Image (cartoon, rainbow, N blue to C red):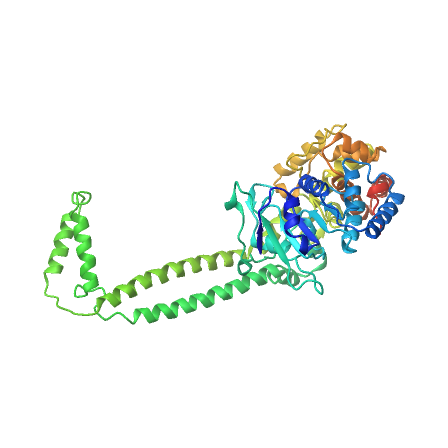
Length: 518
């Protein structure tokens, strides 16, 4: 691993030019585009025949999507790609992401600026990976990368069959050198399983599993397996500590704790001095205790021993006791955790019963409806049974459903939807008052403008002009909406009118750039 001290990416690229292609990781969409443009002003990595290959791929893409490079700064990306430079982030449209990935895979991009999503589940190795920073915004604060995150990205360096070794460079900020992480592969954080007990989980278990099968599912999942493994490991450590404790105890003689023991006499002398101090001497019982200690020490005790060995043993016992207390605490936590899925299951089941979805194993209409949903099951079911999905205009329904399970970004700007969404806000508040946990009623009006505009025939250009969203964000919102409409379609088998309505909404919005191809 090497440190690349560079004021701009061009200097970093110059430092690694013998080890290309490179993935240049940046923690910010806009920054990937800015850095790519900076490098593009000084570097061109492609020969003439390679430029022709890139241009051919671009023209094939433009033939199917004529306006794909006309939005925002995408003309710059078109030019950069023909120089062997690109960028990749979640804000790009799926069409552009696919083009960039194909060019990189065909070794026609030599430097690709990308966010960390490019390293997750995508097998595109490089000769070199470069980190523009080792700090990122995690949704709550700026923090240094974890070992796991760093090595997930750094691990892209080194192509099998091409590179003997992979190279990893970190750009150091001269103003904050201490903010650069120094990562240790031996300290990569463990990945822990987490079973999410959702309303659909509970309904599916009740519908298809026996009580014994449900119990096994809740107690023998991967997360529970990890906890049992951790419990066994802690118990082994406790056993080793207890053995060591017994061994250390053997250093003491039968006089341990008696007045004849030099260690005990020293302890009594220290206690006597403390009780004679101005802080303690006037406290009730102090004088009596001082006299008692004086009488004990007055006895003839000439026991001779290597009490230094006992002192070391006593200190080790204290340390062992501290370690043991910590392990016992961890063990108690794990034992409590082992029951958490059972508690969560019964908690969610209680909510469903209180809301009239089920009674024991008996399913009511709401329960049958929610059984077919896989996102915000309670909230979407209540939208349907409140009549909102049937009574409101289809463009409004599209806008409302687009907000399901949506959390607005930190700097996101989207106009207020052009319809009254207060009934949905009131429905959400009623669910929370009824004891439904907030994470089962996640909804925001923000995407309503996007879905409403798209339904009424507006294109991506219109939405881009009126919001701070990027193409990828818009496509994601509409595609998530299409998937939710598909789920509601499956859930509405006993309500032909609602089924026909959601199918029509889906038919209208499943078009152009966002079309879902199976």
